[in-house]
Image (cartoon, rainbow, N blue to C red; front, side):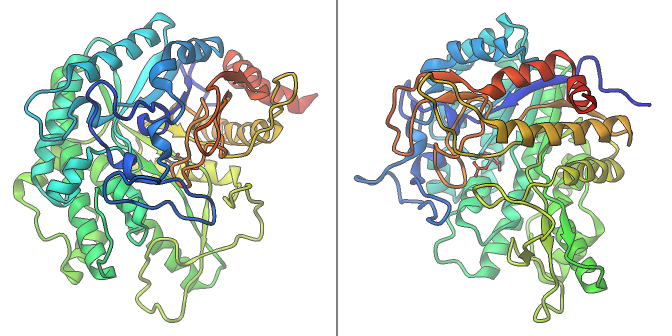
Length: 484
Ligand code: BG6
């Protein structure tokens, strides 16, 4: 029987724009995350044209990791973390994206963060682009719709690979690169592609998205090549959001619609892992006259820039139903999703499906036969601080427990190769989807609210102590608890 690796990378994950704050300190440039207001589950965040007076932008302060990183990393060490996933804010290094020289202050900040990790033997796992492209690239070039942005990104990653050569070995090129397939969502399009879609028709959005995605994939492949050339020990992954699309019923149309939905969402992994577009996408592009600019050099780059592992986030599954008015089985974002009657939902309406996690790990292994790194998983929930400052987050413990067990089943019973697990928002941070602080994922509570008011003091939740036991037993305690 397969076993969980002895050197399994237990840890947690965050992203610069959602945790750092200090949005305009030490010569950092404005990033796309800085121009998105707060929102709520029933009130979308607004993308403003630059910073507007009177609006609240939650990423400006976030969790103030920028000034708390020493204390935070010490707390992670106290939980016995083996690794810590974080991202480098592109606009700290190149404030405008197309600057000639990098910003030394920004580079120094991450030097300090990585050194702090090293002090506790915590392996940094670094994402280059986690929804935080310099805003100036959006304004000047239209984000990833312009081929020239590939060169700016390449320069950014080259500087980082060289500077942090001795501090970082695990890298990922783009966070959840496949989210942009939801091209009717303003936020996904801005976050992934740097596109402000305002008045674009659906056809225009789709066309822009596929072209932007192509440039990102070429940039990603170039990054892999550069990273390997700078340090052959570098392990460089892609990162995709894995949300399996279940058919609503055994009706063949539902099954086929779900298969189409899977193809539309996961071809990114084909390109990044196998080095080429899958047949179904090549024919979709041709038929619909999409992705017009692709060169032989691009294809060569894609072939030479295959990733070493697949990073993935898993939160939930989706269920898909065929619609009669969709005879071509077109899949656009989440419009075909229906409620799965077998699954409960979180406070924010996300289905909870631990077995779907095992299914996902199997699906990815069957398709790509590559090591997997689970770099996000978790439940966003409101926490209550008791008078004695304790926080009893049994809902989080229960969600994580079921998911970790499912992952271990996938490893030990299905033979899936997983190298690590970093649940999302291990330190409370601002939600990407809603811009709320109250949608908390962490083991470590940050005293701040949806308006950014609070002491920013850190508190340990019950899950803090629980997760440490999971790490110490390499997951075994979860199964022993069941036997009791
Ligand atoms: C993933 C992102 O989509 O999900 C994170 O990589 C995000 O940036 C996380 O925070 C959870 O989503 P949300 O909307 O609850 O913050």
